[in-house]
Amino acid sequence: MAKQEDIFKKVISHAKEYGYVFQSSEIYDGLSAVYDYGQNGVELKKNIREYWWKAMVQLNDNIVGLDAAIFMHPTTWKASGHVDAFNDPLIDNKDSKKRYRADVLVEDYVAKIENKIEKEVKKAQKRFGDNFNKTQFLATNQRVVDYQEQVTSILKRLGQSLEKEDLVDVKKLIEELDIACPMSGSKNWTDVKQFNLMFGTKLGANAETAMDLYLRPETAQGIFVNFLNVQKTGRMKIPFGIAQTGKAFRNEIVARQFIFRMREFEQMEMQFFIQPGTQKEWYEKWKENRMKWHLSLGMGEDNYRFHDHEKLAHYADAAADIEFRFPFGFKELEGIHSRTDFDLGSHEEFSGKKLQYFDPELNKNYVPYVLETSIGLDRMFLAVFSNSLQEEELENNTTRTVLKLPAVLAPTKAAILPLVKKDGLPDIAHGIIEDLKWDFNVTYDEKDAVGRRYRRQDANGTPFCITVDHQTKEDNTVTIRHRDSMEQERVAIADLKAIISKAVDMRTWLLKMK
Ligand code: GAP
Image 1 (cartoon, rainbow, N blue to C red):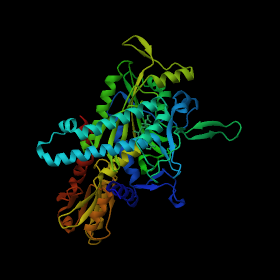
Image 2: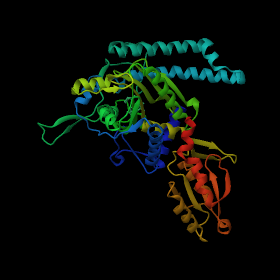
Image 3: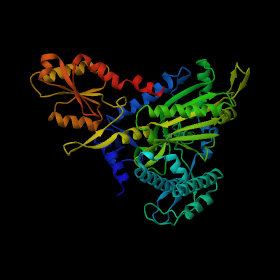
């Protein structure tokens, strides 16, 4: 089995074992691509959401929040283009009877070529050591240049065929690239067909009069239909943004990658309303801003890259993904889309209501242009969780499993451990918890030897272990152990709050965006 697959399996089983993510309705054998978050998962998810909300809403005086309903009037989805254009191109393998997204089959093929490029880079890096110049190598090594040309030409053709809805050519491309079914190895493919991803449901008790509804496939439309409500009641002046987090639903066909691609998931989206003609400038600004947000979490610059879209969604005039290095390779984590005036313009047309802004600077009315940032909360969870899970070789030839979550996001900030279950040490530990719990999520653990308790907290992602011992009774000090370095120091109980705050405060982390 490939190493990547092994790592990914470990991520999934660790997420379950430590109460982060469970399969939905597991006692009934689960529901495909639907997941529940356990006692730790719900905290990590909440912290990621808050980290995003603070960066987008609290720290920007021209961005406000919204919480729109999941159900929306069905015409919304006609206007947004989702009824007609929110499709995936699907292809079936006639032998294995497995269904795939045709574009994903091609993209996976491309990812294999990109892996070869990365291997060449690593080999050369080893050979040339400090003298290695990656940019020069990528531009001059013939084998790498050939691989890169292959990638560009395949993606260009795929983009153009999808753009023109030329599904015959998409099938032709799959055949020309000799792509086989990953399950059976067969190359016996059906034609490519479009499949709409929205879930339908009904509103009302009477079968004849019930209204057909959709579960929203993106949260963005709740923002567009409320554009004027917020602009007028908040007296917002362009440029301004509306941010929202909430559930979205898609009947995904390729749903094999744990919480990477789910049928019910959560998005964190922000629509930034701007003057027409300024979209290029804002597109660059938001790309930069969002990348800074990711980098502020300290998960490694090399793990991110931008990918500009060849095939643009029906609403966009420019779009890029921030891709992250997941255990199964670089994949989309967040999208930044220049959505023009498509959505507001279309809602004007379908609703018959004006959705315009009077710009005192230009002294005229217009339909604003929109710059969107859109990130999946669950996908961000997977990025953080998978990147943090590490197996470390220790000096005494043992290994430890440690979940090096950014401390600001960790579900539990500190575990308070009495060295023994007697001599009044548990009472002191409980006293510390009573004091700290107003500011942080903390936990108590007295079971097993203290070394095993440290390991348990390491695997759980807890940044600090605070041990109460007999010296504590003498001088009100405890040892504080740092998860990542395993270093321990003796500190006063009175200083604990300040020490933990310094490490987990969102302010400290978000200031890194500056
Ligand atoms: N409003 C624009 C929009 O929805 P998108 O690229 O389709 O754009 C935005 O989705 C983000 O939502 C993606 O970058 C991804 O992080 C997340 N996302 C999309 N589909 C998802 C799914 N099925 N499961 C989990 N996250 C998903």
